[in-house]
Image (cartoon, rainbow, N blue to C red; front, top):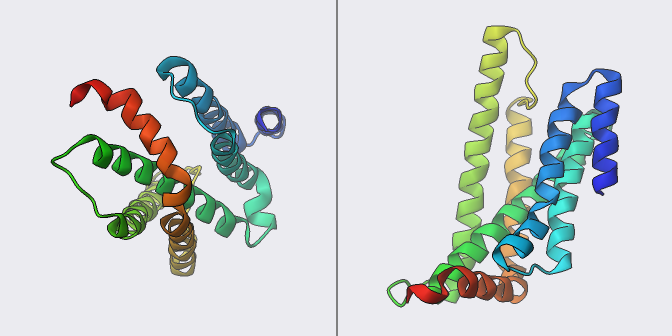
Length: 192
């Protein structure tokens, strides 16, 4: 996938399109994060988690290289995938803190609600960010790397963000608890 991302950066350079260049370079940096966490923090991540992270950024970069314009459902796929990834990070962080601290207790049933609300909040912030970029683009006459395409687009984005959050809220506890325990052991073990 990293080779594909390098190819997309090259494609953006050859065609004079800044979106695939910027998004491809950022995505490429993100693909190295799992290995960096494992090497620098002794935090082993399941290969499936690395695949999940890489797939999310690859799909977005492919979208910025033209898939968003050519494939109507591509934006929905990337929103659901990104929201699920954000939900996984939120769950892992909250669960690691819950496991670490005797003063903080989050009931297991509430984790699903927590994840769902956190992801929806980030989704709203993201849409406001896109709205701000659109206003800036209108004021300056520049093209922005992200754009909002009206109210229908915003509502659909929120729906697919909700779907990604819901999937992790329902299935995340079974698959991410081990990651949360590793994070707690690595970062919070001596703080008790």
